[in-house]
Structures are given as C-alpha cells and as structure tokens.
Image (tube, rainbow, N blue to C red):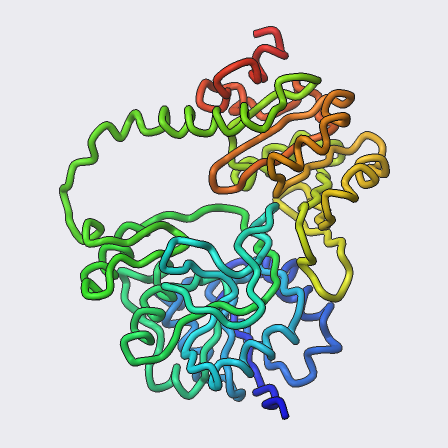
Amino acid sequence: MSTPHPSISVICVYNDLAVRQQCLDRSIQALCDEASDVEYLPIDNMNGAYASAGAALNHGASLARNDVVVFVHQDVFLHSLEALKEAARQMQPGGFGLLGAVGVRSDGRLLGRIRDRVILAGDAVVRPTDVDSVDEVLFLAPRSQLLRHPLTESGDMAWHGYAIEYSLRIRRQGLRTGVADIPLTHNSLSVNLERLDVAQHTIAERYADVLPVHTTCGLITSKAAKTGSRVWFSSHRWRYRWLRDSFAVQDAGTTAGRTVGVLADIRRDVDSVIGRSPGRRLYIINCCRGRFLERGPNQLELPRRDGSVVLATCGISDVSAVLASRPAGYWLLLTNLSPPDIKALDSRLRATPSVLGFHVSTGFWLLFGAPFTDLPPQWRSRRATPLGKHALVAKLGA
C-alpha cells in the first residue's frame, strides 16, 4: 500500500506582480484539477519589506497550514502539482530533509530535468536522488522541520545561496538532500549575480569541513573563502573557451550548406533574438529523448519582455515534420541537439539558411528562418565567431 500524499503549501516571495501572474499564478490556475488540497501563499516584497529571501520565505512557512512547504520563484511555470505531491510523499520514507527540482551531484552532474528559459537542462530522475545542493528555483521541506530549523536570513546570503546553505545544514543533521522529478519551466528574464561571491565565501567559511560543494552556480572550494587571491591570465580565459567551443562546432560536421556558426549561450541571447523576430514571437522546440511532460499540453506560450516564446518538445525523428509545419515567416529555434542530431538534419541545413550555435553550458542549437543581417550584433564579435569557415561576418561580406 502506497503512502498517502501529504498536503503541500506553495510559497513564493515576489517583487514583480506581473511576472508572478503570467507564470506561477497562471500555471496553478491551469492545474486547478490538481490543486484542491494545495495552499498557495504569495509573499509580497515589492516594497522591500523583507531584507532577504529567507526572511520572506520563513514568514510564509509560519503561515502555512499544510505538512510540506514548497518554495518557488515567481517566474516559474509549474507543469504538475501531482509531481510536487509525489515528491512530498517520498521525502520521509527516503530520509530526505530537502528535495529540489534541480541540483548538482558530487561528481558535478546536473540532476533534475527542467526547462531553463529556452533549453532543457539536467538529467531526468525517476526517484529522489542525492545531490550536493539544490537550486533555489524550487525546493521543498517539511513544515515542522522549517519551523525548528528555518532558512538562513543572513545578509550575506540574502538572495543567493540560501538553499545551498540549507542543503549543507540538513546533511549535517543526518538527513538527505536530493532532487525529484518536478517538471517546470523557469522563465527567467535576467541572471542576477550580484553578491553571489559573498554568498559563496560565507558558505565556504561555515562549511569548510564538507568542501568542495557542487552547486548550479559553480564549485565552492576552500579558495572561495580566501580574499585577495590572484587569478593568473584571467583576461585570456575566453581564448581557451573559444578554441574549445570552436572545435566542438567543427566536429559537428557543418562545413557545407547554408549554415553559419556562432559561439553563444542562447539562454542569454534569446531576448535579443525575439526582439528581431517577426511579431516578436519565437517558436522553440526542445529536442529530447523520452518525454519532458507526462501529461498536459505539449505547447506553452510565455511572455518575455516585449515579445513571447512558443515552447514545445519533440524527438529528433519528428523535427523534419515540425520544420515543414513552421508558420510562414516565423523563426524557429531548435535546442538540445547532439552532433548526431545535426548530421541527421544535414539535408535541411544544406537547403535552408540557418545558424548553428554552441555553448558548453547549453550544447548545440539551430536557428531557422532568420536572415543573417537581422541577427544580434554580438554574434559578429571575435569571441562569437568559431575558428574556421563558420563565420557569420563572412556571410555578411564583412
């Protein structure tokens, strides 16, 4: 006999009401048939009433009435409340004090399959799996535990690292920290790194006995606690990355056809692409093996700044049909591609102007339908131009 699901309370501290309504609120409303026993507690911080995320979320936990508390960002679109309930059910039998949607294992591997802006990130898990730390985007813990051991409210970890710190503190108490299968789309509009170094420095000092610690923002080592250390040749590190990524593009086998190469993190540049796309609307297909969503509609449209993205997933065998059915005049972005996937699309690449992109953090992506003259100017920089003949500038006659 399976253990019944504990009741859950979903808590979000927000500073942008429109973002919360367009993402988190909308997803909970769409899942209303799963939400009858779910408590939703948005915590208003638009006027800076709380000095830290921990203070706001701890206040929410004190108001919660249910057994397990889920902390989630305002820009998250949840795809399943049942998945949250299942994760909550699995916590106590597995000895977990903390579960997240995504985290990093002790070998540096990202676990937990989520959609990070426009790509699928992390390896899927079928059951709660141990990690070094979880990401703040979504994590859950028993309410009784949070009342005894609340999140840190330290100013040094005000908006970064509070889930990492809690991960390590829970592990010290003999409980497990892990990730569960909780599909979501994180529609982040920015990458806020302000005072991240301060948070990591504080964690390194407090938890020197368990270092190194893998996180979604990098590896925390004893060096993170040292000040004034010199980084040799830091101004030239980009050259190593450029050379490494150039070789990756070359190995993908796209020297022929009408494809040019760009070294770019599409998560960072997608809004620049949207701003130049017809109707400021970009179609995105995440290529995946297996399913990202077990239930519900496959297609999702979300606003981003002054435009929108239309997101869906499919297998590589279905890509040709998707390309053929692309709305006339619109641009289509394919993400999560492997070199074999690119070779499988060779005939399309020879017949259709396209941009092949690569970044070590996101892998390969392809943009179809965009005239080379309309692409973001940063893609013409030296750092974005791969070694060899895959230069966007060459196609423009520069």
